Length: 338
Image (cartoon, rainbow, N blue to C red; front, side, top):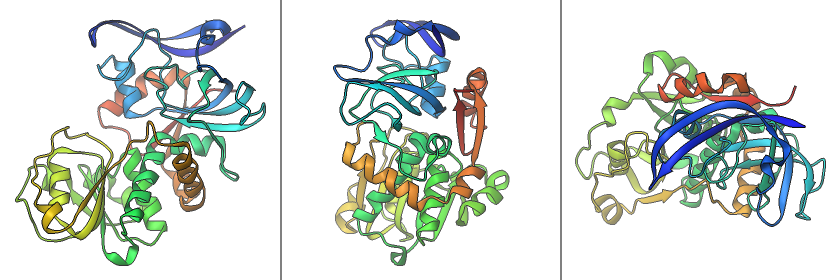
């Protein structure tokens, strides 16, 4: 028997990609034999997602795929068929985001998967496999950021929350969740005209053009934000920090603009601002369960459906190109089973 999968084959030398090929292939079942570590879990994959990181891997950009050959896909949702870990049994519906899949281990863009149970979570009751895949790494990251704001004491009554990269997967889910929880949200996007109606539908009360954040300003600016969720990094994050209210918390979860941070210590020592880093890849099992439970209860499913499009495995290469070109909003799920 065989299973269908996207497969990346590369020649790597000291982190450099010398040769790259990404194709769809029918692979033998024993292709996954060495995956999953000491207590592997076998899964029939129902849905995966396609994220910016997956787009980079499929396009042969450096920094994502760390082994070859590799099945990409940093998300998967499916049904357990066998498990060497006693926490999971055949028939369990499970979701896995990050944890190294699609980077250092075979991922979700395939009809079958064998994974480590370390970061695996049972699907919360009431959340369908398709919706869980639509949430995926992006939505999971967004909820981790919301939880960080809550731990920092940012409540709806504290003031306005700003979300950068608003039309992307993280930003879209963050806006929908924050609005559902009662926050007033300002969305920062480079596509105000094109995405304005969409972002207001998700719950954004105000829209700002990302060009207003593109160049770092003074170390301390007019106080505007009780909290923020930033997926841009660089000058955008620096400006959000400089505009944060006293005691505000800003969650950093991306680097779309750059990895640099052209700021000073002034927001931290004069206004008590907290910069909370979000790492969705190796989040603890306890935090994962908390985040998924909150997503099941706090993310309006009708809005999730509105921001989701579905494709088949045959469409992942074209979709990857569109994601890297900034032409995709919301979330894309990949259906793996007929």
